[in-house]
Image (tube, rainbow over all chains, first blue to last red; front, side, top):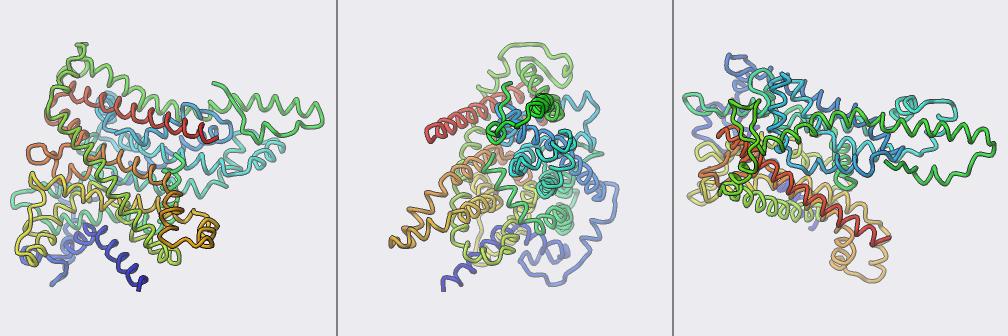
Length: 273
Length: 317
């Protein structure tokens, strides 16, 4: 009895939490004509036309460009965050370097509203010629990813017995060699988690994409909203739905496969940070 | 900066041979110089992309500046701050963000806690059931905001459609009266899984001995929950409430894509207020002064919080 109730609560929770995704998914298979007479959750005449429409390049909207921009900026944002965080995390975990100032500063960055930095970064990027470039967006996404990367990597490195480092030291290995040859392979799972989670976070970022790009580097979160800007006859809901499904697909699939690692890193980041 | 070694290193007995211990200590001294070097790329990156913008922020907040004079700001004292503090829209945004942060944090933590405890017996045996519950966390909040434009649309949205079918009419979710609560529900539905995850992990981490001891003492399952399990999860509750409050307080993406600043600015959060002051009104000085005020406020909260936790830790030992 209580078991059945648990299942019921589970199903209701999943449906309620995922309502927007479900509705958008269903709508993306409806024709424009059907949508006006049937806004419900079933489909009379499923069609793939919306997806064909999205995947066709027009002058005004080019979904491949948005996806490519998101991909490039997110890879920079996730990769650079790890490259910067790993040596620093090693110094924090092994050398107790920066426990007093650097660590608190980075951890608290998670709690600072990033809009504070948005305007000066906009001006700075204008001077540096980084406005509306994938590199510029990637650099800012790095900042967004750094706090969690540092916390997760510091914890992962601190969990390795220090005897491992010392054994290598006695064998004559230098700090950099120990870091890359001994420690890096052991914390590989943490690095992979940071990469995946950082990629998803970067892909889903919106504020900086909106402020720092206009034409050439527009990410898909911002590009998708262009499909809602009514052109003449109002929003084409089927097309807009298909764009959102396409734009949300990569992080959603990554997340569904890696849910175990992601929940682990979210919990670590929150509780240890 | 003072360098202290982890206890495992410090307490290690000295090596027997003096030459070896000497060699080792000189190696350690060399290593000590390597720590700042290893952290330097990160520090330099932060100085360029956060330190410099902060300085710029402070300077511009004290200057008279427009988009035409962006490169030659004139120092003008505290005028920009005056503009912000005297702007009723600013205080409206502060009030929106505070209310939004508190209400969504409470709702997310309450529902997340309930789900974590109630669904735990199902999920322990089938962990893959977690994946669909976590899906909302993988979708961009900006996209979710756009999706709700469809979900709540008066002609093509399923929610008004079914409400009309069942009750004969449907509220307009995005008008001036309802949009605040619509946004609270939208935010809560997306981020409850985050709170749920934290509570689920904390619930699983409760040692089995604690439960068994209580059961041997004849505690009912209600007593077990309220006297043992919930108190043990209290620190997680504090963390979850804080994180969710912060994220709710600085909300931008989903509010912006669903309603923008709303009819008459009723849904302007602080982030949206700053964005619109800068990009829509071109009031650069005002936007930056508002950012600095927000920065000071978050700094105050964070410093107070870390002071409180360090004092508690100090009292505990």
